[in-house]
Image 1: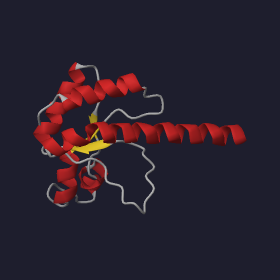
Image 2: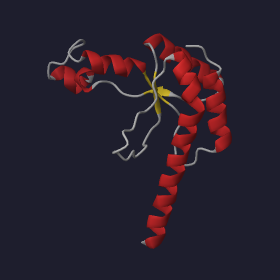
Image 3: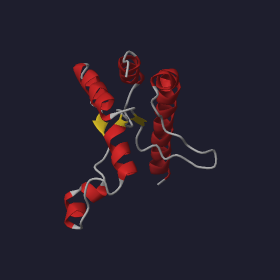
Image 4: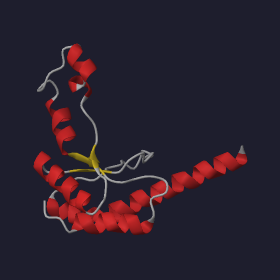
Length: 134
């Protein structure tokens, strides 16, 4: 049991360090390009199950996804709003019901983020992103 806990804690630390690395290395670019990064209030603990960017528009998100794809980097949009999912639509959900949710859904981009993400791969992601004008 102690070995399992130790292994889980090591993974949590690696994920946390990867998040800090993205956050630090994308900070200036994001400010310049008007892109939002995760905000964690000081009284909260972040589980870091993903690292995302909120792009200025759907068009800029799609352009960055394509730019990353050209470098063989997989980055995806985050989610379909629940009210627009098949079940949500069966329950009466329709476009325009939740405009803020729909807007963020259109602009959110998930970056590669997993336990075995190494520094070289992360640097490749960062270099590709920071070379982009959005």
